[in-house]
Image (cartoon, rainbow, N blue to C red):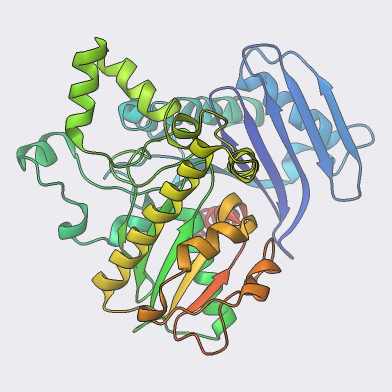
Length: 403
């Protein structure tokens, strides 16, 4: 039984075809420059790789090329698209409308598209990808939407309500939603599996998804009680190009000084801030780290801000939960940058965190414990796997729908 997992961007389409009997990835790829040329890289589990330029006027043509690669030529892995049992779509924002994985219909796609104000960079192309997928594969092919916001729906009102006039929550559903939910759910679930915990009642963990976009979640009893991203993925802490949470007055002050429109200010905070804005070097943590090691003051400052802000949020969540059993790092930075993990966890002995420098140095890119044996709070690296969670949810929704 095969499930196709899709993650669409405004000009891109990432995909994985997963054999659910053993959860092996049998093919994966990336379509880029959709609407502005086109390029595809397609990799098969047997080692075959196809990479070339091809015209992608829209997501529809990208789907057609993916289907062609899967069913024809050297990269053939299925005889036809009929062998794909279902398609699972990652969707950024479900607002308060979609609180769990949802069977895709025309109405669902329209609603996802209408939520563009909450996810302007993600929701419209994800809706477009759903339409294209149903056009290429047919409307009888089961499609399921999996929302980044779903896992965070267990937050209590005291965590998700912003202290602005309550009428704006009632009128516009302005609240904290949180994102990277599929990743936080995967690593927390995997932690329980690794620890042999069948019932998470009584557990308290902090999951840190650190990458170009980053968020942290407090998870008690297996359920999210707080998370760092808010109404949109801009909130929280310093990211690749996002500023994270700042004094709201900074927004109006800069707008007045620079004569910026709301859209221009949003662009500044989303695309020109964070590691890029502070360092002036790059939005990529690896480039900023290299520059800092070469003596670049602003690059080092950007990294110092990042570690400091993560530490504050982790500490706040531990306080809010009354302690923690584990702090888990995942995502591109969390999984690969031992120095960031060390900087975040240093001077946390007072709350039971004791790092092992050697374990941490050798603990990247794999499931590993990077804290000392006598650490009361376990610090771990658990590489995320959002695609398998999307595939599992898709399979469950389709089977329940057919029942």
